[in-house]
Amino acid sequence: MDIDRLLSQIRTEIQPQIGRGRVADYIPALAEVAPDQFGMAIALATGECHGVGDWLKPFSLQSISKIFSLALALAENEESIWTRVGREPSGNAFNSLVQLEYENGIPRNPFINAGALVVTDHLSGVVDCAADAVLQLLRIESGNPDIGYDLQVAESETAHADRTLALAHFLASYGNLRGDVPTVVDEYVRQCAIAISCRDLALAGLFLARHGLRRDGSRMLSPSQTKRINAVMLTCGTYDAAGEFAYRVGLPGKSGVGGGILATVPGRCSIAVWGPGLDNRGNSVAGVAALDRFTTLTGWSVF
Ligand code: GLN
Image (cartoon, rainbow, N blue to C red; front, side, top):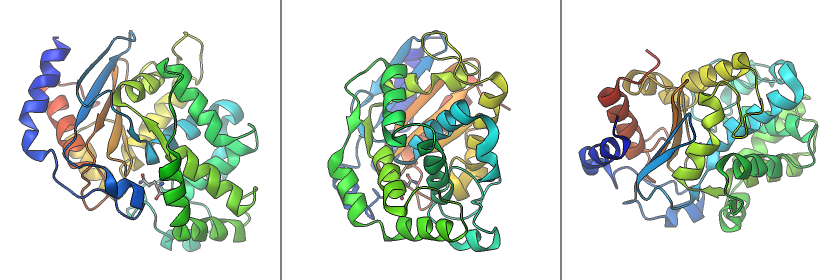
């Protein structure tokens, strides 16, 4: 398959979607990002990487960081995380508070904000700093030591973190937060504020397509753990649009409000797309369209 040709065909076909949707504005720094940008990268299981458009331009990782913190928590501390967070789709917005009370402070899954706060807290129990551990993993797996935090985005989110703080306090009231609220929220906000390009993200996510093997061939996760992360991405990675995403794309995928999506084709490749315009569930309009075209044109879906 000629991947470069495929990528430029996808880019041409989805052109009308580029710039559509709304950039996230509840984090003011993200509202300044120009919506008419688009990048896509495909990293093959061999480590070869191809891209199109703005694939080398860093964007805000946001919720895609939740995959990496979950992977690290599983790698460091095996399955104990599952006593603190569930694995069911929430059917609610990513920042929703409502289910926490019904579920006694156990978030429905690790990819909604409440669940990600618990994972960050869990990871903080085994590494010095959860956000730095995520950053380090991204740098090593992508081979790019220059990936860093966008401190302007972090400060902007911190200044508007009432909802995240509320979630953290609520979790703490059920005894499901070990660290103190400001520290856990700070680490969570910083891991979300990592700036990364499609190229580096596709490479960093390759362990999900390589059944848990890292770039250097060492094992980070067992094939079974990796399969499970991909399963949770499929069912919960795009929040209350997970059904629609599975229907249109048919791959495990994780979105973020920076407009990125990371998707896995197990055994074959990892795909990162970026388009800042979001639909009303917080998923990139151009990104979903590009992944939809990708699986349709290649037949590379899990179904
Ligand atoms: N940092 C963002 C938040 O907590 C991440 C949300 C997202 O990307 N869906 O709201």
